[in-house]
Amino acid sequence: MIAWPLLVKTPPPMATAAPSPAPPDTSSAPQTSWAGQAPSFSPLYQQIKGLILQSLQQGEWKPGEVIPSEFDLAARFKVSQGTVRKAVDELAAENLLVRRQGRGTFVATHAEQQVQYRFLRLQPDSGTVDSEGPAQRDFVDCRRQRATAEIARALGLRAGDTVLQARRLLRFAGVPTILEDIWLPGGPFKGLTAERLSQYHGPMYALFEAEFGVRMVRADEKLRAVLPDEAQATLLEVAAGAPLLSVERTAYTYNDVPMELRRGLYRTDTHHYRNQLN
Amino acid sequence: MIAWPLLVKTPPPMATAAPSPAPPDTSSAPQTSWAGQAPSFSPLYQQIKGLILQSLQQGEWKPGEVIPSEFDLAARFKVSQGTVRKAVDELAAENLLVRRQGRGTFVATHAEQQVQYRFLRLQPDSGTVDSEGPAQRDFVDCRRQRATAEIARALGLRAGDTVLQARRLLRFAGVPTILEDIWLPGGPFKGLTAERLSQYHGPMYALFEAEFGVRMVRADEKLRAVLPDEAQATLLEVAAGAPLLSVERTAYTYNDVPMELRRGLYRTDTHHYRNQLN
DNA sequence: CAGTGGTCTAGACCACACT
DNA sequence: GTGTGGTCTAGACCACTGC
View 1 (spheres, chains in turn purple, cyan, red, yellow):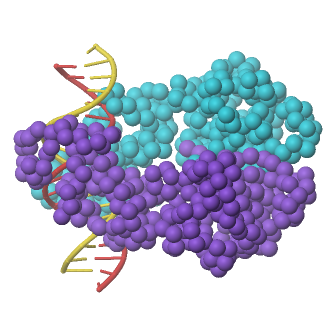
View 2 (cartoon, rainbow over the protein chains, first blue to last red):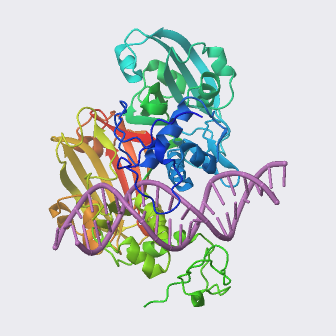
View 3 (cartoon, rainbow over the protein chains, first blue to last red):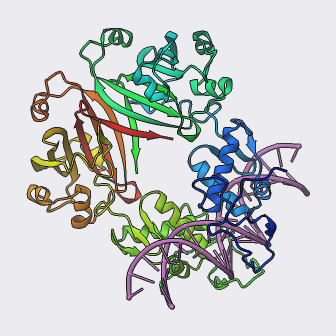
């Protein structure tokens, strides 16, 4: 058994004289020995959430796998099942875990998912995403280079660090619709080649998960209307003055660590970017 | 006391011989008398959620007001506090209610809110929304007219029904940045005039709440990059070929009833549309 | 101080899935 | 059947708010 990093109930426990059978061993209740841990005064279920998150980061459970049952986790962390449930509920709400009744709770994955592209909001004006069939992907370019100051800042690197850059074109029903420039930090993605990218079928983020253990968890996008430069216009087969939707996305792994910068140019003559507000 | 529209636990209750003090009066447990209610076989807390929603629609509690405490609601619906809690949790997650510890649970409102514009995703490229100060609003136009087929479809009306149309320009720090055309159904918004609109200070949706009892709960947006026509370019003070972000928003009240169609043109040279994905 | 929402527990029963 | 998550209850205690 491993010693868990001190779970504390919101007030430092002091032999609280529980009325009913108090199962947590009362001996493991330290008073004020704060071993560095900065934000330690949070609800129990938040602490459990943090521990589960940690296990996810460290790869104890891999994408697509089941995690232990709520009952087992409760025993492991020495809390009630209800507390684990609340922690898991939040992680499920954040799309890090997926509950499946009768089967268990699974680590979310970009592969084998309901929707092919979890972060792609572009939709055809008529018909559904499915009706237009899978996109055709063409990698125009892929190379290793030194990060500019701007790219470095976005990826949390130093200017001059190695980054991978790729450019690809997505076609729907043969029509070039999305042109993307992608930047990845060289370290975590060492060994990624153009061939690897073009050979892989399925979402790019699934490849990152499977081959490099990098799981994208969250993303921020900034949208603008822009005009293409000459190369972009040619690739997308539009006129020079045609307005395009620019989508700059930063994707993050656990702990808000940025792992990808992506600049997309979307044609919005046959598609639109859909957003739901509430 | 009012007879509540039959709450049923997932299996039709049949004198379940509860082990401990079973508080719900066993007499009020109908077997199979389904009085029309179509989707009645849902978890209790969902039914409670539905009932609370109904009270919100019917204006039993108005925006900004407190609703009864969880304990009171539990008594009223004859369920446990925990069940009410779960119902309220979901409504709070959907931004229909706002919990405030120690004070109570409140009906959400577009006025007196943390953020001025709940549905506006445009942000300045540098600085924060607050640092640029409040927008200057100019109503360019406001008139009553007959709905075109397209507008009617979006608002759930018949072509030819009366709609209100308004056009306004928002300036940030003096720079015209957003040009919006707004269509509202004539019925619910009878009596809305250009003067009423320009005199009101604060979010437009707050006015709708306060003056017309119409509360916007959710919205869908479709984004595109477009070029302005002549009038639009003039108002926004941009060149004819300048790309602009087109944002078509449909806003809904309770029960997914569309209540507003809005077409915005955003300048994205100094601002960007921000979206968070997870 | 009383009242509210927030956390935590414990236990019962149900729906679902796999075997 | 066994085990999983899903629902529901009941009760204890806490933290925050306002009287």
